Length: 586
Image (cartoon, rainbow, N blue to C red; front, side, top):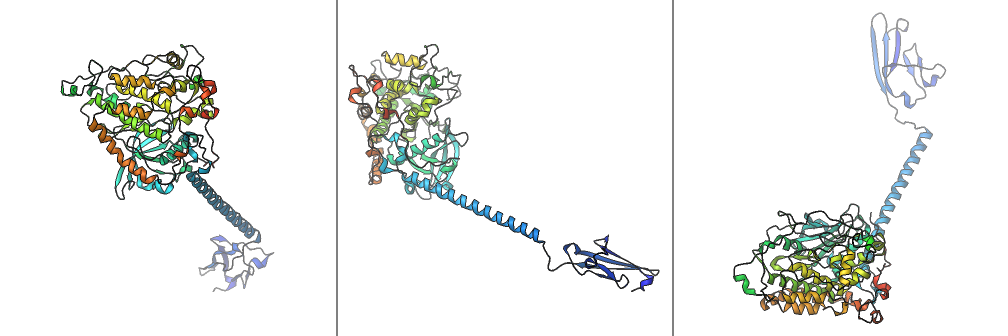
């Protein structure tokens, strides 16, 4: 080291001149002629890279060393802040975990309660439509893993619902993929009542049993009910709804009705008489109905009868619905199918009669299970393979019509052209009103999907016509016997309309024996399944049938045998609000 009197010494900390405070030597002082730097009391600020530079006439040398404190001291104030923040963070985490677990437990508890239903609360004086929420849902039997369901293309949609084609792995047989249809509610802008309506439909279907001529339940995904995801898995019908099918295949229809109004099966062997019905609302290249529609809100017809004049009465869309703002019924699937090659070379009058027979069978089964359809129409009849037809979208409409909120808001479409006269005037819905709708459905089928009541628009006009005794004329391709049945279905007195058992027998007698027996044999499989599945409690059997005689008293009939609308039982037009925990839908 150079002699101190010949040497100039400088110290640096992190390449900056080191500044010492002579008044506080414990924080740093120079000794031994500036050759030694002593720091008696260290602090965090003393850490760093130190450099000592010594210069004399000979030259310059320097030395560098790094200081790092081993036992770093944290000021008490800073330490306390850190501890408080950690405690607060821990509490927040615990609260978050507790809330998540509590919410999950609460949801699972409510979901289990929903699945179990409230069987002891079932009222035998009420029908299934008023208390579907009280029915149990057999989770072990019907729940299907969501990860084994692969959604495909859309088959149809309504205002709030959608139907998707899907592949279900193992839903029928383990390891086998089955093509199915999945009903769900749209996640955007959905009123919870529609999710609950679909849930009610699921409960009805899960307790209904199976039949060849209804769309049968295969399974469901309910685990994410709180996230608006309720998937109802049903049979897939590849040819879509009967209304669109007949509309699309008019050009291959063969009319087998002879000049006497009877069906002549031999006409099929003669030169076919094809029909081509002009239908201006249909594009030549499309099976969908097009053109503008004029609508009136159902507010104007909250009781079915408008106080306005015919000129201002509500208009009815081309599908026969009294609808506001281009809406369609929220419960309608509008299932159109996706198989564009139907494989049909011809469609005959005998086919129409066979389909009518099958619809009767399906409706007879629903009536026997005390389930009312509420919106029977060709659009709600699906065509599957082997010329099998299946009824869909049952059990939803009645509560929509009778919901008090629905009556006040009046923002839902009404199927006016399919509604019985007592349904239009008093909102009385029953198996007998289903029979009326079946008559209109027959008219649709034998007119090849023309809109009912052609040329008559407005709910006031329709009601006035019906109340005055008007009934639609025989459609162009209907045998006389079928038209006679239509007229009987449209009897103004509900109790005088034929029931579905009688209709099944009468229309079945018009079907050739081998064909009738074929479809009866196909249904035997479903009957055997029902016998196996319904060995326990049959909850639907406990309830009241949707027969109009259960909704009105004998005193409700006037001298002319018609129902007095003011005497309708109040509970018959009231939706029951079951005392069940409500699952919150976010």
